[in-house]
Image (spheres, rainbow, N blue to C red):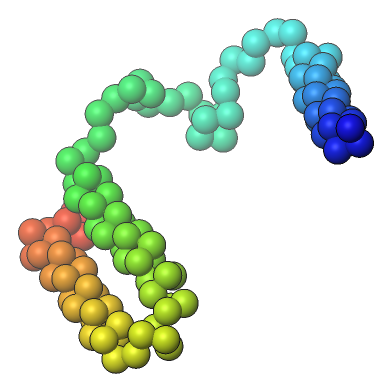
Length: 115
């Protein structure tokens, strides 16, 4: 029964903290809405928040995701490379070559050009 009492007390403290934060926000929040929000350091936005992005951002996003996936695969690889040996090193260089091909393709297509 003692573990349940500890769990319930932690949940009670956590609930009290959350309620306290909401209560402080309610008490300290300004009652009059601001003329401009925190977006762009108080400047009025020039376009709507749901406006479309330029098409070049999608290519940059794909390049970012390529590097992001590289890191997702390199962390576990770094843990097992010593135990697997040369085969793991060859496989990682093959993977990095594929990533580099994608980056070179994006570069050739002008995804990294901003003008």
